Amino acid sequence: MLSSLPVLGLLVLSGFTNADVGPSFQRCPADFQLVRRGQTVSAAEARYVEQKRKKVLPVAFKAYLHNVQQTGVVLPHYVKSILECEEELPTVSIATSGGGYRAAIFGAGVLNALDGRNASSAKKATGGLLQAATHLAGLSGGSWLVTSLAQANFPTIQNLVFGGGDFGGWITDFDLWTASADPAVQAKFAAGLLQEIAAKATLFPVSVGDAWGRSLARHFSNGTTLATFFGNTSHGGGILFSDLIKLPTFASHAQPLPIVTVNLDSKHINGTVFPGGSFLPLNSPMFEINLFEMGCYDAVLAAHTPTQHLGSTNASLCASGFDEAMFVAGASSNLWNQVNVTDAGAANLAGSTANLSVLVNETYPQPPGLRLDTSNVPNAFRGIAPETFADSNETILALCDGGEDGQVTPLQPMLVPDRKVDVVIAIDAANDVGGFAAGASLIATQQRMQLFPQGLLPFPAVPSTLAAFAAAGLATRPTFFGCAPAAGPLLVYIANGAPPRDGAAPRTNTSTFQSVYTADALHGMLDQTFVVATQGAAVGGALEDAEWGACLACAVVDRARARQGVKRSGVCTTCFARYCWEA
Ligand SMILES: *[C@@H]1O[C@H](CO)[C@@H](O)[C@H](O)[C@H]1NC(C)=O
Ligand SMILES: *[C@@H]1O[C@H](CO)[C@@H](O)[C@H](O)[C@H]1NC(C)=O
Ligand SMILES: *[C@@H]1O[C@H](CO)[C@@H](O)[C@H](O)[C@H]1NC(C)=O
Ligand SMILES: *[C@@H]1O[C@H](CO)[C@@H](O)[C@H](O)[C@H]1NC(C)=O
Ligand SMILES: *[C@@H]1O[C@H](CO)[C@@H](O)[C@H](O)[C@H]1NC(C)=O
Ligand SMILES: *[C@@H]1O[C@H](CO)[C@@H](O)[C@H](O)[C@H]1NC(C)=O
Ligand SMILES: *[C@@H]1O[C@H](CO)[C@@H](O)[C@H](O)[C@H]1NC(C)=O
Ligand SMILES: *[C@@H]1O[C@H](CO)[C@@H](O)[C@H](O)[C@H]1NC(C)=O
Ligand SMILES: *[C@@H]1O[C@H](CO)[C@@H](O)[C@H](O)[C@H]1NC(C)=O
Ligand SMILES: *[C@@H]1O[C@H](CO)[C@@H](O)[C@H](O)[C@H]1NC(C)=O
Image (cartoon, rainbow, N blue to C red; front, side, top):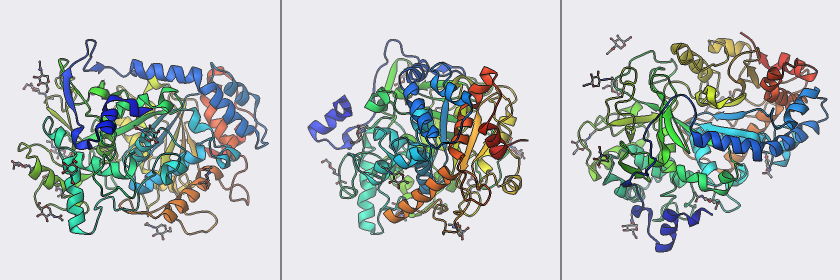
């Protein structure tokens, strides 16, 4: 139980509000290393994956194989032998895109379809892969899903979204940007957010990112119910990202490792901006925050710092308590830099929440020059890679929404060679056309990888234009990329790409800025998403592919098959002809 953790125990026992919880400095642990260089994963992550492979994956893949087999589709022998052999088990990861609530909900719907705990998902043979996944990355709206799921101790998606078990569920009834239309209620709400960052403001720079994180916590984390939304309770304050390793489902390796991505908004970076509303150039350094480390795998920096001590800038005095889970999700979804809220009188993102930056600075005056529109983290990487890391001299890393460079699906963490990922399930609910995804995020990642010929992370070839995606219908049914022998993972692309095939009105292409969802809307979106993730392609005259579950299993084992030197055969040959896109 996490309530036995010191910080939360204090919270519960003394009845303090989270205004009393905040970061602090202590002498650093004796073995503390502020910065770890390189493009390998941390020792802690390697240990987590090793333990998961040993203790969880054999059982998880057996259950998944059982689900696939009960569809009656005859699989080539190698699918079974790989999924039953401990040494051969594939490494599966999941990346879920940004796109506000729409993306959080669509991503949740796909995870539900992959969740072996849902009997309908198991019956469709997609269920069980979530249990077999080692990494789960999200950005922006996708980071709300990933962070919420992790901190709630990995409940089923139904319990996550609607409450049940002992988690209260997502609170989508109140406006995400401006909680109340009543100015008095809104003012009190904003005062609550500000009060909750008081302790942090005594030690660290604060900005709109801090208030935004506290606001998000009310919708996605433990500690808030419909009844207490406007109340003066803890609202999940003090739930630290790095502390989630102590949750039972993480300690038992049942959860995949959560990863959240953010972009660096650097004033020193100039480069090609990916078209279609992107804001930062594609060469902006990309950071990831996982439960163990925050760092950048780009060759320009290739350095990491412990998440638990985020806020530290030297190895003598260490910060703790900076890495609040919802501050992390807030950084990944911080779009305020796009509306220039640091310029007095500049456009508001959405009414008075954007005004939070003004309120933050009125309450806790920040030095001139400090960004108020980004999520600010003291730069642990100061002096590192001065030749190539543009912000090596900066005292603060100004972080923002992970999709601002156009890479709206967080694929890059899964390309890190040391993660040895065999297959990435890429869930894309970006708004490319009319609230639907059309492939832009994959094109952005492809272009970015081409910018870095050294320190290249292998990414499968994808079409280079939206027109080519559309012509081949690649976003309207699952598509496999990287089917030919290649370094790096095979990509299983599942996009929110089209209205339902049965002619029903689409419910999943809502606006990125829709800020309130009814339970009916949530149910409608989750149901349509379930169909998207479980139907596969339209085959013959049928709306769905009775072999889709088997085809997905063929993709899951394909890199392991290649390692064994076995030839693709049987239904897997048919499946790859049906689902692969080749350059
Ligand atoms: C959040 O709530 C769930 C459900 O009550 C609980 O299992 C989990 O431990 C809580 N998480 C934290 C970080 O306290
Ligand atoms: C919330 O409660 C704390 C402690 O009980 C109190 O100091 C604070 O003024 C309250 N804040 C609001 C906004 O009511
Ligand atoms: C930034 O890029 C633009 C377009 O390529 C160029 O015109 C401009 O000179 C560059 N500025 C700096 C400071 O490098
Ligand atoms: C280490 O960082 C802390 C907090 O920013 C600062 O107060 C302290 O002076 C630094 N110590 C050294 C040796 O730089
Ligand atoms: C934001 O600020 C930059 C630099 O001052 C300016 O070039 C840009 O036009 C501004 N954008 C908006 C939307 O105001
Ligand atoms: C924004 O903040 C200013 C200063 O506190 C206040 O005068 C103004 O009414 C606020 N605007 C909105 C839309 O809340
Ligand atoms: C924040 O407030 C301080 C003190 O009033 C002021 O000097 C600074 O310019 C403000 N920052 C911004 C970005 O407006
Ligand atoms: C950092 O500062 C040093 C000394 O002022 C300077 O030589 C170097 O070029 C700067 N590096 C960057 C990346 O701006
Ligand atoms: C959703 O798609 C439908 C049908 O393609 C379209 O009519 C509608 O405008 C779209 N909704 C949004 C919010 O873009
Ligand atoms: C399984 O998922 C479907 C589709 O979203 C949903 O209708 C059903 O309630 C879920 N079942 C359970 C037990 O969570």
